[in-house]
Length: 331
Image (cartoon, rainbow, N blue to C red; front, side, top):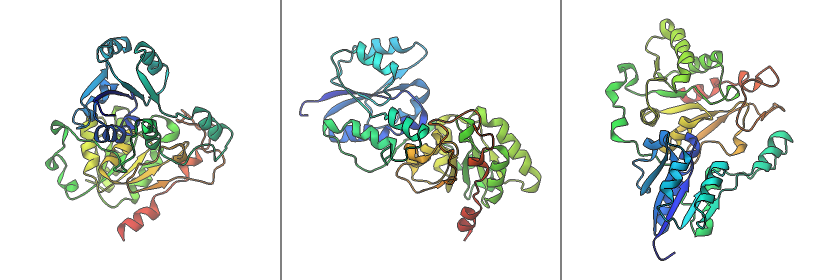
């Protein structure tokens, strides 16, 4: 690829999936002579506005997909890298007719075999981020094994003096939320996990996590004052990223902030319930340990998570513990 090419990479959602695109952006820019654009939702703009490999962000906002397409049609791209591969991106590619495109191997059938038929060898043993990188192999791009990356805008950096004195000499971050019930520890297990942690804890999450976070905060208010700092619903995504970047280590479910922590090479204790890391969703190229119950024949119950436990017992979460982990961390 001698002449400078213009490349559009697409991934609209969600947070984790967008963060997994960062190795593709880096490898494309560093290995090819190209002008690189990235199309994503406006909600994730601050995750990419400081990315040195992206020449231009193309944002999907409230004006809708067709408005975005109208803007993209003026760019005259040479290649489209579709890392979302759904009806919206199919429509986008049709409207940009004539532009050579590559789509990542979504493995929909293989995922169905793995989840529904319990075919354990249906999926390749690699991460979704690696499958994204496979998409650009035809362009001569090779993985650089440098992991994920995120540069936080200066305005979102949370300074040390923001934290109470009790948390200024080190803390553990706990990402307590996730998109589905079967991917989250219930309140009583969250409290149990926190009880086993000796260092101060910072709870991070969105507005939807505030109620449970408040319950945890109330539980520890008298018995361990200054132990819990509840930041759920109080920070934007960039500020939350800044907090996890400063943690000594992190607990988290399969959710965006956990994967953001991998950008900073944090030790991650990844909690899996109804879903499994074999779906390619584990922490990427960062020190980590998976907390899961491998002895249940009902796992995984779904690919993305469910609103309730199909069996009613929720043993995939109720049987988990971090007691041994924290004893090792103390020693």
